[in-house]
Length: 175
Image 1 (cartoon, one colour):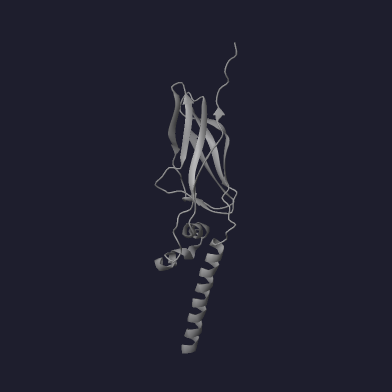
Image 2 (cartoon, one colour):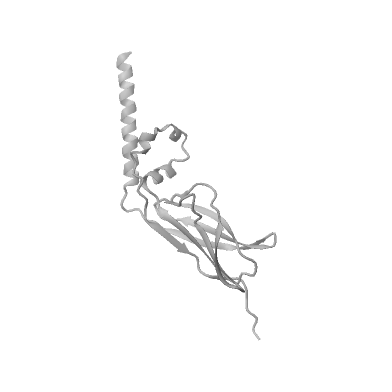
């Protein structure tokens, strides 16, 4: 009975060490590239308001993240009063975008908008956030002790900001 317990304990330790090594190998790839695209799918009217449909697509092989307290979506709009900057909306869902995924959102444009542009701010995920985002859907993660998570570095990655092209909402009448 005692030998069986030792064998089981050794197997569990071996599996744990293999899992940690696999995690570090997954996160240490130096050829990871951040490639995020911001595209506008179109404009629609919702209850009399103009709404731009925007998609953020992570086509790179590195997870990107944003701080949940910050609002990463911004919009610049030109109306009769001139150009104005405003917060385009709040993020729903997780605070990250793993590779080969999209995040769609809506931007409500001010009344009388002539031209507009949407921008987003994000940063490369830290190794800790990268691992967390990639295994978020797994049920066993909630049973991982905090000291194991503390072994993974929290160093934040490089900040990025991208903007869409400037879109025009009206056609000027020619005399």
